[in-house]
Image (cartoon, rainbow, N blue to C red; front, side, top):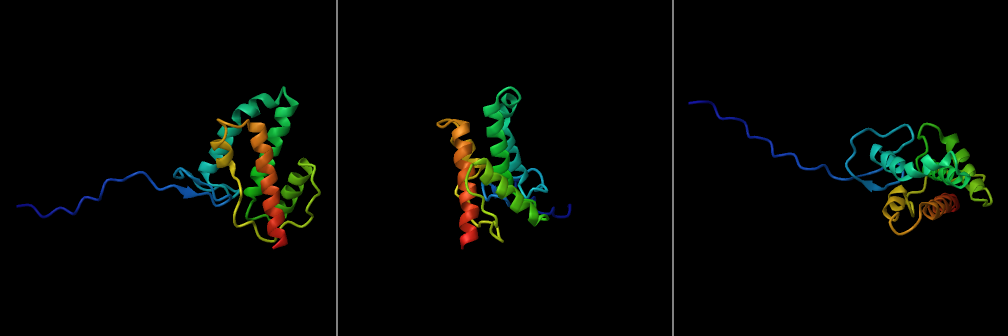
Length: 152
């Protein structure tokens, strides 16, 4: 007679979705660590995939290049390097200048706690709205979120 076997652990099921530490978007389970930019690996991959086609066009299309630059800045404003608080001021200032809005010289001392829109929203709406319009709306809401946080 053999000794009883330890109970077999339950079968592993799919991991639970996780919120990005940068923008709060709830995404597929992370397969990598958060990057230096404060984004979950899944969030970074979604952003790269969403903007990939536009990036390929950017070399020969000034409008595509401008949209890519705005997308990169909006993404950076939601995922600032947590170890470089001074970078927040620079990226938010760049964002409002790219939007031709009045610069907010003093971004909130603390990040917004809730974002109206994230890269996940941009990706989700691609089938009904063009990427250029989505990026513009996203960038404007990110700037608005920072401005609202500075006023509160």
